[in-house]
Image 1 (cartoon, rainbow, N blue to C red):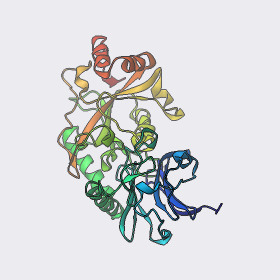
Image 2 (cartoon, helix red, strand yellow):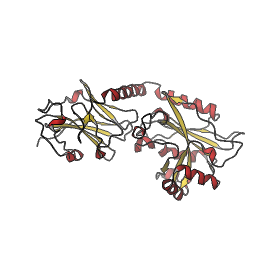
Image 3 (tube, rainbow, N blue to C red):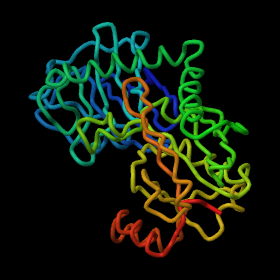
Image 4 (spheres, rainbow, N blue to C red):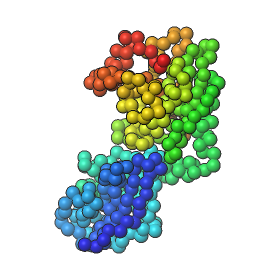
Length: 361
């Protein structure tokens, strides 16, 4: 058997996915891997020898690409090898999907919703129809190409001087208007994209609690939303907020893991979502007996001073999408299990009936 040659190997900007293109003289295939190196989605790219009538797709998950059956390839006699120097990857803004391009244009697309073990592989230019190895790219190229163009434009913008400043300025000014003057400002990033900061808004005579808000989460759309809805714009961009009477520098530590979570774990945050508290010693003074956090869009349904309601943070948009602020409410293990057994709305009603405050103190 001929040795496998790697034609392309690239990690996503958020370090949550990796794409590898391999060639073994008979076939070329691409693999989307998770941070543990496990294959999430394999997709066949080309045969380079005579196609069989049928073959076994199981080897795709072990890095052994089978030959595409003759009825599903544009070149049943095989085609020439791809030129590694002409291959490039374009990651989607969300970081969960990737497009592969060469001199002839779009070669393959592995969208964020692809799950080969559920019969949803990526799309390949060489494919005909739908098989376990790949679906025909020609059938959806018109729909996917705008996303690739958007992705290239997005990363070009991100690389430009002042891009991060524009995100920071937009969110900061919005907080100034909606909450009040700023206090401390902390970097809670982990050294890689996305860049996340936390802005402190100290108590005022009209507000007896501190508001902590992330700055920068809205600078990139969250992953996996297109698995659940056709139009993702209304939920794609968020910031997180926490109201507290505890020392702000302690409370802000929760955002060290929570702020980058959607892109590291390849998921999304929405109203009513609960998130298991990650083990992080630095925020243990804040954690107490809490094991998760509940994210709510309207914390006013919980208990709090009637004369100092939650600030209205609606009205900001970024790159054409509305930015939603979700408020962080720490919850215990029984409450987390209750939310899973019932739903978030029922849990919020239960917490409200028990007099739970939306302000962490």
